[in-house]
Length: 301
Image 1 (cartoon, rainbow, N blue to C red):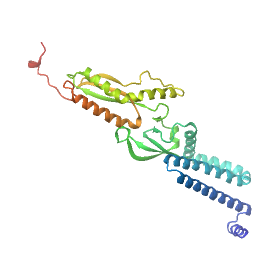
Image 2 (image 1 turned 90 degrees about the horizontal axis):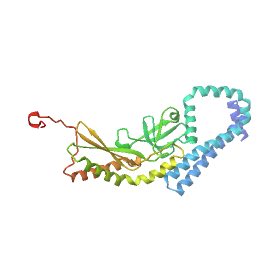
Image 3 (image 1 turned 30 degrees about the horizontal axis):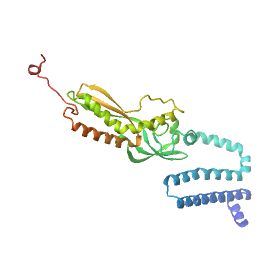
Image 4 (image 1 turned 90 degrees about the vertical axis):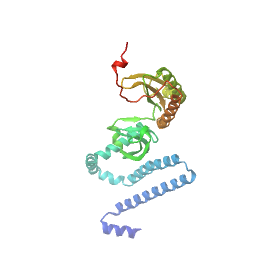
């Protein structure tokens, strides 16, 4: 060992104490790396739960580097005391030169401590929307939904967003607090249709599909109201009536739904609407049309 130290001391010009510290630091890093790999191998053998494996991997990714930093800093503590003023100037310069990485680290601390979102939440940051699948020191990752795909379904793209974006862009969380969203379906029928009957049919269909969310939503609101000023008087589905002078009467169904099942729910409701209207002779769906009025033959008395 002494020969190795003498060899490096001769060729590098470093003192024996510095070389000893370097050797101890390298040993600490390799031991911690081996410990991390051993723990992960044990976890991988014990469970096939993807979520549990991910939690262990992410926890070790934070804990092991932190422990290594503490241990290596202890080894170099005496040397740091001697270089304190120099390191202070260097760190100040680095803080200016590395403004964006430092901002991202501050954003990571904000995400970890304040928890505006967590792994598995569906969020929108600026123009990007998706499910959070990873949070790291400099960036977090979402599995994109929406964009060119309708009704908030996955596009399959993975988007990496700098953690510092939490300080710059508005954040919408679909999963935290109140876990349901309001959705609307607009159904247009002709002026000649029996709109009251159509409204009754839509009420029945909406209640059949969305009523199951009402009681769960009431519990969610009670919990959310502990942290936010959230208040809804009516959580049951409702149908609104509006006249569209271009082509008919628009009946809009407003209902609660799970944001991850929005498209499936819309699909089921639309199928029931089409089947119900097909059985009625006095209800017709409307679409943009042109109508010409012949005054001599159609004039009113």
